[in-house]
Length: 346
Ligand code: SAH
Image 1 (cartoon, rainbow, N blue to C red):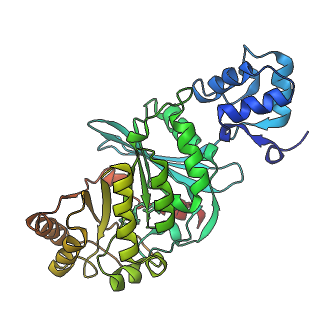
Image 2 (cartoon, helix red, strand yellow):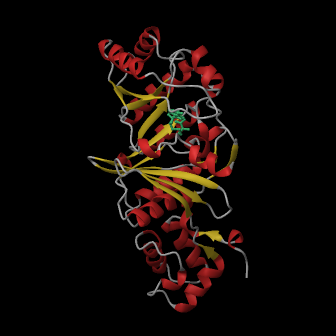
Image 3 (cartoon, rainbow, N blue to C red):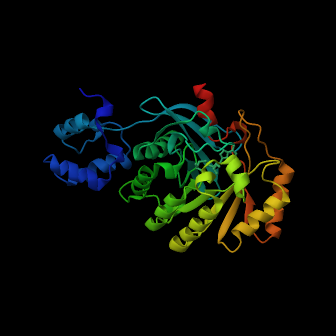
């Protein structure tokens, strides 16, 4: 029998693609919707359980297709606020992270889009061990399905802010978003999805043309090229002027307000002058600034100063900007993005 990696990854197929494949195999097309329901609603992980599918077809499916699974290898639950952090093992032995958070409006799940990251942001743990590979649509969906299965909670909204750069895995991420919003599956409105990027300008432009309705979060972290290039190498390729210009185009095309992420780092980007530069850069844009006190990672010395974060937020507000400091969740299981995986692999 062939091994799973020679089989077709069925969870990455749209219902239309699977219907076409079934018809080609000489099977009835309507079976595709039945199988799709087993996979994406009932979330079965075994073709044998698909009781309304003829046994012969079930056998045929299991020789041609595989249902990719993620295994939870570590699970940390906060005693303070019900945050759950998952470390998953993929079918090839790689590891990724997801975090389930509880807000007053429901549960939000943060998922990974790649194993490791190429972008090299200096303050980020995900990038330290380098890049291994991009995730398939199925592996992004399974992070949701597995967290829901394990926690018994429903993910009401989603943020693509875990390990990896979503726009460096553009095609798979877009396909995943289509599967996620399919009425025959999880049926999540893309209005409940935020995609965070370090600023790959041409891909932001491409994404805008799709008008998916999601929220774009742009990791800005500095308002001048010198400081930004110092902490985010991607800025040397797509400098701030290009990034802001494409953000304006994104807003014009989609009508969706952009959220700018700004990790406040003591002595790097938290002065009053930095606040003024940031305000003048974003002036007149319909946007929101999300301030995040930088999370300490053990490989780097960056840290946040609580008082300067508050002062920075106040300065921005005085300058007429719409800025808030992100609430900290799961403080007792705190591990900045990518740290759980790092600890596990060392
Ligand atoms: N690659 C994407 C998404 C993953 S990172 C991006 O760059 O946006 C998700 C967010 O966490 C980004 O805003 C990133 O800059 C931020 N981040 C990473 N490490 C951090 C740290 N140590 N402290 C605070 N924010 C961090």
